[in-house]
Length: 263
Image (cartoon, rainbow, N blue to C red; front, side, top):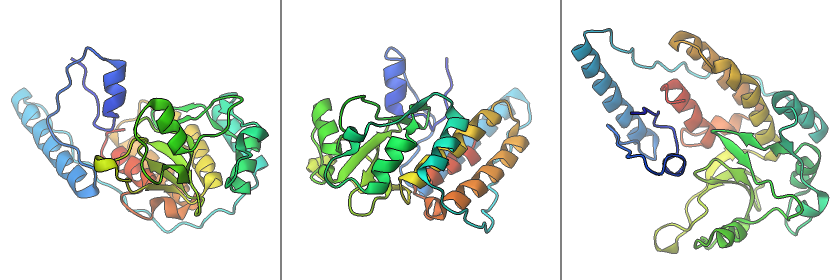
């Protein structure tokens, strides 16, 4: 039997272990309230198991509030390239100019993709849409490649990569980074985008921060992991305050799962 934390994407588990039978003891919803309800059920179940085993129960997670932080000033793509290289070494995909020279791509997005690039593999969080020699696809084009029905607004998103569950995209018009399902919702409807970052430069810098710090989380006990998360969330908020502006934003959910011990 293999026990996996609830933060793992169901599709990832099914594709990695196609013969596995997957069961769960608590539902994990799509909004903050239902996710926390699932966590309470999980903690109650763990408490029952510890009673049977006559051992100490795992303490409930206690989340430290986000303190006021001073935003760090933006840096040019050349500086972002240095931050990414320090975190990921050669594991960076830099896009060709021709790949980003399509109508509607904001200049800052094109320049950042060419000069700084994105990490190829920051699993289990992000994988770049790395297709050398091909234009960066819209979400509609990616859906067509996968043979699934695109949402009506799929042409308004430029795909940067994937978190395995959703496509990570630049939203035309706002230039925000958002997470969007590749396939249309029920009845062919569009799904509301999940906010990730203010823009691509902020997203790349936040990934570089995660890449530098994630390896330092390995092997920590609960108290040490708490201190790590306090440090990480403060630095994340300094890079892009809007990234943590809602409990349902992409980075907020990752932090929630870190505090809950799911990541």
